[in-house]
Length: 446
Image 1 (spheres, rainbow, N blue to C red):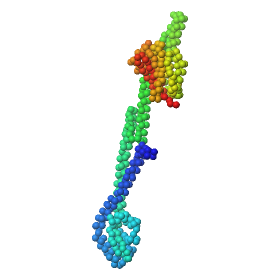
Image 2: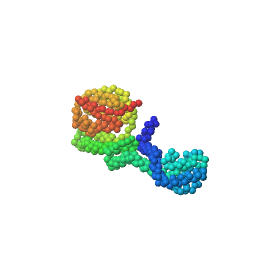
Image 3: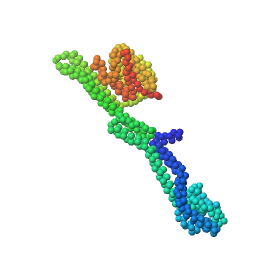
Image 4: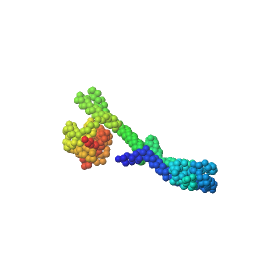
C-alpha cells in the first residue's frame, strides 16, 4: 500500500516528482562530497609536501637546534615551548606530544586534520624530553585555510552540478508546459479540433485532459448550433409550404362562403366543414413545428423516472392502440425515461405505422436485452418500397407523395430528437417489405 502511495507521489505528482529528484541529487552530491575527502586530502597533502620541500633545509636546521637544546638542558615539554628558535618558523605550527598527554581530539582540533592523515600533512621529529620521550609535529600554519579553500571549491562545484542536474530534471516538464501554452493558444484562437498531447501522468496531464474536454465540449456545442441552425432554416423553408397549403384552402373556402347568393346552404356547410378541417390541420402543423423547434433547441424540460418499460408498453397498447393487431410479450426491464416524452415517441411511431403498414398486417413488438442495453423493436409489413430510402426516413418532411396532405413529415424526426435527448438511440432496418424501427436505451439495474 505504502509502495503504491510513494509511487504515486513520485511519478503521478509533479510536485512529488520534483521533490524526489531534488532529494535524490542532493543525497548523491552529499555522498560525492563525503567520498571526495580522500581526494581532498591527497590534493592538500601534495600542496603541503611542496611547501615542506621548499623549506625543509631551514626547518631541519631549526628543529635540530631545538632538539639539541631540549636534550642538552633536559627540558620538559612545557619548558620547550619557550625556546626562542620556535619563533623562526613563522609559516608553521609546532605541537609537542608524548604518550601521556597524547589526545586524538586535541590533535585534530589543533591541526585541523584527522590523525589518520597526520603523516600526509606533518613532519615528525622524535625527541627525548626530561624523563620522557615525545614527538614534535610541524605543519604549515595555513593548512586549515587550504582545506577551507578546497572545501569551497568542491561545494561550489557540487552546487553547480546540482543546478545542472535540476535543469536537466526540469527540462521535460518545462518543455511540456511550453507545448501546452502553444496548444492552448491554438485552441483559444478558435481551433477547437486541436488537442493537447497527453504525456506523463501528473497534474499537467490532468490539466491537458481538462482543456481537451473543454475544447471537445465547445466543438460539439458549435457543431450542434450549426446543425440546429441548418435544421431551423430547412424547417422554416419546408414548413412554409405545408402551412401555406391548408391556409390557402381555408381562405379559398371562406371566400366562397362569403358569396351569399352563389351557393346553397348545403354547399356552404360543406365548405365550412372543409375549412374547419384545414384549420385543425393547420393548428396541428403549427403545434408540431413549435414542438420540433423546442427539441432542436434543447428547450425541453424533462423529468426522468425509472419505469418498467414492458408494463408501460403493455398499458399504452391497451389504452391507445387497441384497434391494431399487436403481438407483444411483456418483459420486466427498467429504464430511466421521461414519461410524457416516451408517450410522444410511441404516439409518433404508431401514427407512422398506421399510415404505412400493410392492410390487416400484424404489428410485432419485442424487447431484447443486450450488453446492458434494452432494444425495443417495432416490426410491421409495409407496401411502400423503402429499399433505398431508409436513410431518409428520419429527415424532416420526408413523406410519400400520396401522403403529403395528411402528414407533416415531422413524426420520425421528432422521435429521433426525443430519443437523443433521453440518452438513447433509434434506427431503422428494412428487408423484404418488413419494416423495423428499433429504440435503444441503457438498462437501469435495480
